[in-house]
Each structure stands twice: as C-alpha cells, then as structure tokens.
Image: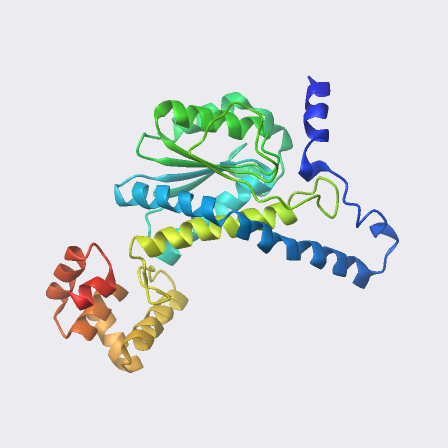
Length: 303
C-alpha cells in the first residue's frame, strides 16, 4: 500500500522539487524571503486562470443558498482548516446562520489546533462525516485537497454525490485521473512549493483566495452587500456595532447620532435602517420593501 501512495505522490506537481529554490538553505534571510515572495506572486495569476470555474462554483452556491440549502467545506490538514476558517467568518460578516455554511475537517475539532495527518487517509470517516452532518440533495459540498488524492476528501465527495448534493472540488494539480466526478472542478496550477510538499504555502494561499471569492461573490449575489459594504452583519460586538453605524453613515450621509438612532429603531438591522433613511419610510414599510426585493437594499430603495 505504501508503495502505491509513493507512486501517487511522486507524480504530483505539489510534491515536485522547485528548481529555483534548491539552494535555499545556503541563502541569507533576505534572499530566502525574496524567493518566497517571488513564488507567492505566481498565486494570483494562477487563480486568475481558473476564474471561469470559480464563477461556475458561485452559481451553484447562489442557487443552493437561495433555495434554502447549505454549503459544506470538507478537507484535511491545512485545507480543512482553511474551510473551517472561511465558514466561521460568514455569520459575523454576512449574517448567515452558523449552520448555513459549515467547515468539516478530518479528525474533528482537535485537528484544528493539533495536526493529525493520519486522519486524511480515513475513507470511512469521509463518508461518515457527510452522513453525520445530514447532507441533503439541495446542499453543496466543497472538497479541498491540494494534492487532489486525499482519501478522506474524495470519499466524502463521492458520498455527497450519491445523496444528490452538488459538489465542487478545489485542488492544485492537473486534472485527477481518479473516477470521481464533481459538478465543478477548480484547479489552480501553481508549480512546486518553495519547500517540497509544503502545501500550506502557495497551495494554501490559492485555496484561501478561492474560498474568499466563492463566499464573497455568492453573498453579493444574494443581497448581503450594498454598494461595497456589508449590510447583513451581526452587531455581536462593539466593533461590529460601530461598523454598522459607519456603514449607515457612509451609505446615507447621515450623522453619527442619526445613524445610531435609526439603527436602534431598526433593531440593529443595517438593511432596514438604510431603507428607512434613503426611502424616507418607517420600519414596517422598510421591512416590506426588503421582503419584496428579496433582501436587496438597492432593489428595496429603488422599488
């Protein structure tokens, strides 16, 4: 079995030796940093080349979220942690329910802070985690695996597919030879890492960029953003409350005091406060307009 894995790994782009960094251990600190920085500059260009595939992924997410479905990230190691991180940021940023976008990592919560590399080989756990989270056919499951061979992730994607859920696969190697079929494959090709096999570097950066794009663009498309400001954020901290006031001020031109008063009247809903101010209506009418506009502030104001 180990020989089979060895043969798989030796053919992966993310496991290749980088010809530009073979003597990195002989360089000065500044020279090492310049090499890392030069390689990092390749990430944005690689992600740019897969924008059409990312757009397909966004379409799946918008359809899913608009229809009451949920989104699940699933990965192992660095990939799993990035998925959990992106999912955790959605409720405070976009006002989503914590169960709407969830991150699942091989080995469970302990793996977030303590590496458990063997967990990525557990195919049974991948299938089980899909069942435990009660994935349904109107959900989307996003597998993340730099190598594109991670057994835990591939098994989870297959299980999700059996259920009828839509699937997206983010990986950083040429198209997989495995038989798994997904609705959207997103594969930025970044070349070898600065340190051979250290996919927390360029691969991890590319994955983070793609996850940012998937959720941010999806949230814009379902009305969570007005102009370029988040308007569905939860006022669960002092910072978020003050940010809400600032958003109301910038979008409507009112004073700090007026923004504070309107937010209180709107039950701390930035959307309702904005529609009240910009359309000169009361809270009830603002809420009615937002419902009619399916949550889009611009539509509620113009309508």
